[in-house]
Image (spheres, one colour):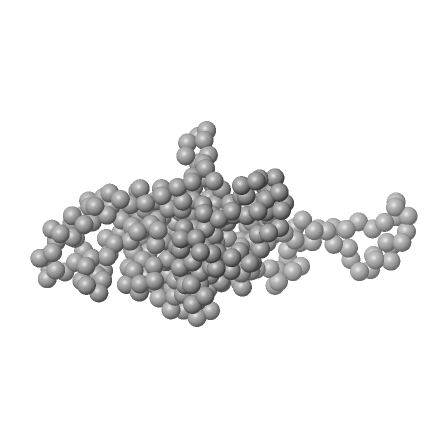
Length: 314
């Protein structure tokens, strides 16, 4: 599991997902029961289309002359250059409900994006312009690894037979030995401290180092604010030194415009997942305008030992 969930592997996985999402509205797979073909995200509806959906799909998209696939082709070029999405930070989540990190786990991905975009962290680009985070730059992953029973010990579901009773296995049914559950005390030296590992990991789509750094510092502030029960206000809070005051009015207007657009961007670029919009209605969200279509897929640099950032080696 450590290989499949390694941050480099996930950075590559997310960019492949985006390639397929960008191609989905514009590319059709040949299907036996659908004369017009099926989009990638609907391949499971037809066995012929599903069988044709293999690793060659990336090569097919790359070699296409359709202008509508240009964005997907740009991502393929980035993938082949190994410019994967950047890992920013990982927050280990405690199993103790009273621990502050449990508050982070309760938030959904869209809410986390919104709060990160509203963090008042002062960063400027190469041209000294003030940088703001966009929801499309942010990928939130709730990583959870367990042994099949969440936080419970899977061995408790197994029954064991002592070696000295193995000879009784050839007897009649009424004389067969009974396998029994074993106490954890008999193998406690082999039991992990936790059967369920949880973490929130944040990745950045934007290639600019300034934006990656901005997201990192915004993440640290978001963690601390959440632990203190503080929610970022929509109004401007100046965080810069007094020497930067000359540009405050322009910055405030830019920030207000940024916040006004964040909610719409969240809705337009929600990662592929099912989300409840009200108590009776469920819809599928994707990074395309076709909301009704299924999306194709779905230490330490920080201030405490809970934070693992991209400067750490595993």
